[in-house]
Amino acid sequence: QDVYYYGIMSFGTPKQLVNIMFDTGSADLWVASSDYCTTNNAYCSDHYTYSHNVSKTYIKNGTTFSIQYGIGSVSGYISIDDIVVGELQVNGQYFGEATSIDNSTASTKFDGIFGLAYPSISAIGTAPPFVNMIKQNVVNESVFAFYLNRVDEKTEGELILGGIDANHYTGNITYTPVVKQTYWLINIDGMYINSQIVSPNYPAIPDSGTSLLYGPTKYMDQVNKVIGGQKMGNLYLVDCSTIDSLPNVSFVISNTSFVLEPKDY
Image: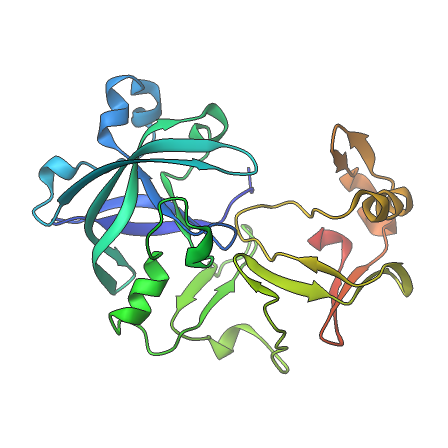
C-alpha cells in the first residue's frame, strides 16, 4: 500500500481508460493488453486492459519489445494508437502492448507505465509520450511537474504536463543542470543528518516510479546506523514507532537544502 503514484489515461478510439503509473525513471509507455487475459484471468479481474480490436485509430506494428525495471519486467509487441492524458491528446503514439507481465509488476494497482525520461533510454526505441506532446504542440512549455500529496489529505496529487502549478509550492524554484540526458540525472552536493554531512557530491536520479531512497552502500550504512534502520537484504527498514525521535535528513542541490522530516522518509 501507498507505494506508487498513478492516475488515469486513455488509449484508442473510443477511449479505453486505464490506471497508469507516471515514471521519471523510465522512457517507455506500455499498457496491459487484453491478449494477456487469455492466460491470466485473475489479473484481468481487477485491472483494466487495452484491446486494439475495438479501437478505430489502432495501427498495427507488431515488433516485439521487452523492458526490465529495477524490480519487475514486461514484454509483448509494439502498437500505435491515439492516447489522452487529462485533456491532452497525442496522435499516433507508439507504445508496448504487454502480453507478459512478471508477478511483482502484476501485483501492483496500475495497468501500465508512462515513461517520462529521455528517449535515449527507451527500450521500445521510439519517442516517449511527453516528447510527442511537445512535437505535436499539445503543451505550451517543455516542462512537467509533480505535486505529490499524502493519501490522507483531501487534495489529490497532480501531474502537470506543460507547465507548473504555482498553487503547489512556496518560495523560489531551484534549478540544477541535468548531468546526462538519459535519466533525469543531477548532482547532489551533499547529504546531511541534522547538520552533519554524511556524503559528499554524487549523482542521483529523481525517480517518481519508486518509493525508496537508494544510495551508495557506505553512506546509506551511516544514515541507517543513526536512524536505527534494520538491514534486510539490500534494504533497510525503520521502525515507524520511533518517528518522534528520528533526525531530519537533508539533500543539498545547487546550494539549496531540501529537508526531509522523519514523516517524509
